[in-house]
Image 1 (tube, rainbow, N blue to C red):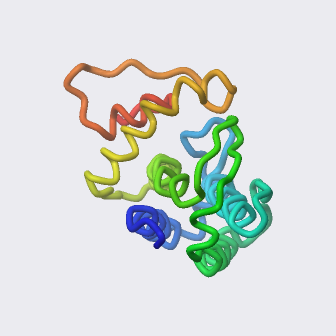
Image 2 (cartoon, one colour):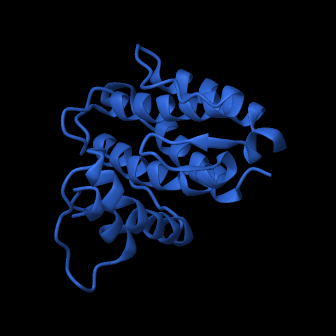
Length: 181
């Protein structure tokens, strides 16, 4: 069974992507050097890579590119969900940072990527977004586990300092070098 939190994270990302005004796709995002379209294309590439893992165990895909970021996102999402059957979800896969786990476990942790980039996209396009606290808390727990290996592998940069009483979203974003305010 596809993890419910994964589907919910896809939903919140898509709600922001659908809300991007036509004149904001080129707006700069909090990801240095990336536009709003680049964020969507990056996340789309991630879905394509998961789809490849589910199909044959090979992480392929990478960022998508071109004029219709939203259309490519929607197609990638639909195609991914169509291949995530029980066989795909239980398949052992090798991940870019060297870990191995069942694909279902990996996508159970994948909301981390979606939550952070939902915030990036909303910020780039001037949208307000409310992300369920349980998605944020789960993403934070995953980030705390992943960050040291991610930094060692060069996948993520330095963490920002936040106040001790910062909320979970602020802490999560800081792990990935973002300032929530």
